[in-house]
Image (cartoon, rainbow, N blue to C red; front, side):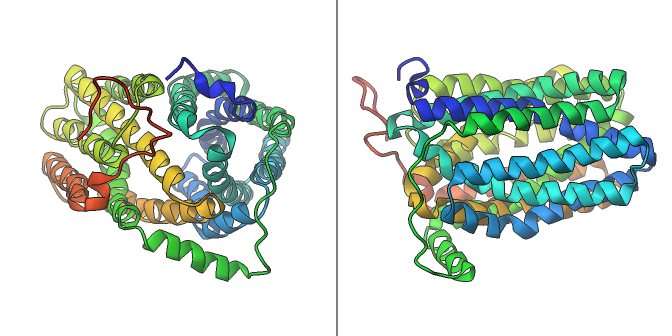
Length: 414
């Protein structure tokens, strides 16, 4: 694969620039919103209310977002949602500047952001195959993932400095500015109009999307697996991890920061590799990569020393990126483009709907059982679920179209 060959596609170049702008500035949102809420009411329950408003709204609207993204021009949907985001985040900033912000108002505006995201994400998933050729699709996904992982590492640091020095309202202004700049850039992405819906209703389109989803064993198998795996990840890693960091001197809060950064670094390195080396068995290698998360999860429970845990987290991050790129390729290369956003919305709903429950369950478990027992049991369950999916023939055997993976002399794949 030629160096940055995906950039040969003009449509992808403009989309990549627009996406980079929103990822860089949007990486500040979580920290800005968290400290904005805590400035008003220094209570974790208030923050959970605002964050839950975003998540619930996203879950409620994501299926309809998929239908709309298959009916209307996807670039236009993304631009329209960015306008909504500018207005809602701008309203948050204005409330903070004027001292009139309240937790209920921020929760409402956060719910608006969640609804907007429910339309953007399926449109994003559906638009990428329209921007480049099959041969460049893996590299295009890896490049977008590279930017996403890079800002995940560096964005919170910049956001923390900006919030600490200027306040969360100014971080929100920067975020809104990124969306404002992205809108005219996206206007340069010229795509053919979507196929006409034929006068069908939205619920008919949802049924068609469900048929496409359920008719593919590899698709629903992995989504069902991730229902549990994501719940374990957010609970064991997101709740128990910080708890151990705060209470175990072998790790500590600063050590936990290094571990999380190492996970992000693993993602970053793997995206670079995937820009050049074709992923011939996207689901097989992807699910094996996901199983690697059991390693840092076990170490977190039995021996949370910083260096070993960071190394394990690096490996897990790299494995997770193999899956992320492989999953995107499997979806984009096997689902008809005119139905891709609807199918992606079912994937998103199934994968994310149980995550809030995982957070609550692990919050309860950590007060009723030893952390080592909770984490080692979770690690075994996580790896088992990931590897059991490989017993499904469609998961194990799925390859890539010939046009997407040119044969190389001396390279074979079983």
